[in-house]
Length: 461
Ligand SMILES: [Zn+2]
Image (cartoon, rainbow, N blue to C red):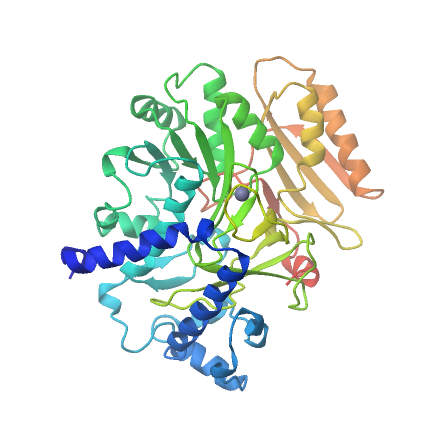
């Protein structure tokens, strides 16, 4: 049964939800934290009905009544991806949970073994709120503005695909007018994507960074004359500073970062002041070091999330995202009071590890390349780092035919910059070559690490 067929229920729930969107503006930091404390207690009560959590907490001797709020969160054991994989399907939801009525979603296989989990309709509605909040922050109207979303809709079991298949978009109609919403598939021919958007004329465009880079190259060649979005949102892949500028130059539009995952929904998004706001009323974010301790402000650590609304599979102190970030205690003056990520650094397994355990996260490693490439007039249209060994890094770049650049000089400058960064004894290979696409991936990743993962794990949580 679709609860949204019941108008009384729909009205009530809609009202609660819509009020929730404004929390980021209406609540100050203290009130947001109080809200989190209450939401956490509710979430824990629900989690205790779930065999996986009940067992974990009992084994650790945790009495959930002793967890009064976010400040006590550290007392709870961490939950890993393996916990969810092992607990599937019966231990990751309460026994009374109606699995047949729920959405079964999974992470895509590109990040190792996929995780499967359950979401119910309310759960997905709250996730959608993160998107509505983002639109509001950009001064856009979710009933009027035209949005193109190039997503994972063709990949079985992603949240996107499940929602489409089960007709969820219809249920989201109070939030999004479908007439104004264009859904396109990542992996479709890039020119076709541009042509479809050219007809639709989006005001907001959401896609993977690598897809946006390809679209940007087409745009500089004069394609997509009617594709002039006000904002472009990069999601699903790391957004480094060079790629951001390349896309911004091509479209003459702001590029903003969105951090959304299957397990955590819309975790954070970048406001027009350039700060990454965490939707802390929906998801609490901890950034931990390799010992599981909170890192200092500005230091890079692993993201651990706690979803603060019940329903479906609880996500509490979950380490499985494997992403790196840092946080800031500062407040943004854009009007939203939600806490800030200082940087979002990409996947842990894609970090470049140099001798002596020096680590460069995916979003940081392109900086010396950007420095060189900018001097040569944005002729680099795509690049990729392949770490073959701790002392051997290959950098591939794809060049645009126009403007013509001194290829050798550019390669040499990039090489010099990385030799300086890496220090003696690290071989840096730079060449003009197409980016590699590993099997099972629909996009070409920024970093391919071929080194033993335990080398990375030794240094990070
Ligand atoms: Zn802001």
